[in-house]
Length: 94
Image (cartoon, rainbow, N blue to C red; front, side, top):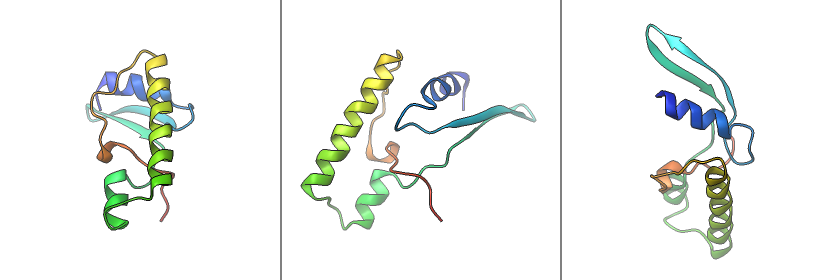
């Protein structure tokens, strides 16, 4: 994770729908960030759900994504790689 990724993650931490950042640092010159572990991404969920979601689910995901992008834009950030692999759903569960 580079400095700009840390800056963005920290700025969005605590906003609804974004992971919480707990801390950061360096170990042997390698930077790290400690953040909330999220659940599966949309790509994984699509594969588990036999390649489709019902219309209500798709609409709900779309509305939530628009809200998240608005939050990012409001803080001055632009996401240049929105795709199913980069959209996580919920908290991590064992």
